Image (tube, rainbow, N blue to C red; front, top):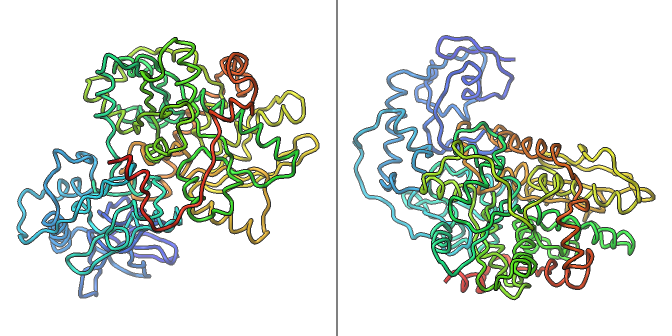
Length: 589
């Protein structure tokens, strides 16, 4: 332990602790812009400057190691003036579009400018201007708003192990972007949106789908339906002041009806159907001897990662579509038939915690119904924006129920949005199908994980080796262990985002801390709301959902039937790492 003084207060810290973290131990808040504890500390912004007695210059506290006997001052006139000047330098090369910016009132640069009382800029000079990159179906880059913090570089390389971002150009022209400052469409970007969640400004955002949805809602010839992902009910409340993880399912349904949707359905129903098909596929692999492991395919970012970096495992991906796409295919076949509506007139909207779903719905294979299965996707943030525009306050709404027949879900479908939820939901059904016995304790805590976890599950004559990976970086480590024959599994769940869908790239952005692990913990707290709803459900296993049973009896026949294969299953293809995608580019145009 080291003893030092910060603003005349003594503190003891472990060797290797930065002055920044030592100060925080005392409750002293040193401002930062680029820093994310345990993920990114490039000392690029120089906003965290402090003064150390005996040193001739000011130091960046985020990379300054604490030393025995060190005396640090965080708020001298020189320090405050230097910080203010650094912020002014950022503002001098930043577009003044705060009122129209996606991140207005939730921007870290804006917050710093207010904190240091910057009203006029004393720094004048030329400004950079870079082309807008909006070719990606999911992520939009506005390099003019980039502050070179390198957070996107860190999360993409170290957490996701994709590494498409770099510092390009030099000196005043330096900017963060793909190689040669090209388009994301020319890279193996997996569209997870984690770069959006860590960006301190509006340099990265999702493609806006609200205008298309508003237009559909106002078209009298369209029957507009909406499906809501499990995680939305535990996260949309944050935008209206509810504590993190608060369930607002009933109010959410009421809000969607007031927006004008003709039917409000639950994508957890689609998740239940996913379990039925995926569990059937796993049983067939167990009987035939593989190929193993069977990887889940619910996450489009993970699927794209596998197609791009590990194409040799494409046959290991479950051929079952994601709940979003399963719901869309059923909406334009089964629901259209039940409701007596021409599927040409059905406009299917999804509300998802994800930005990659915007890419997924454009994949050419997602048209098994004869139409585009899902027509538009709204992120949690976009959904909140539409509610704000319409003047709808969740806190003032009564609780309402989802519509039938695609609105009832089991607890297994609900936990799809939680960490390890897809795995746990599948195990509940597989256990009973394999053993023929009732599963009494349905909660598989051994597969609930924040990043990576493996376990062995006894199921009759089978001892199922399973694993859960959060983030494609963890997935890469898992796959490399399998390739080196250090590990072997039967069933693996991979979700690209930290803490699973509750930590998706389209969820509310949390800037109250610049500790990466605390940000992940914040997102994971949303999962408790889903587990809470699971415990309250009458049916907690997908195969016991009466609406799903009726679907198979009246329409699909049985899990894995020819019709189920045609509508609910798909295939995947290897991708070249660095080449444009003409299909999606054309679709976007």
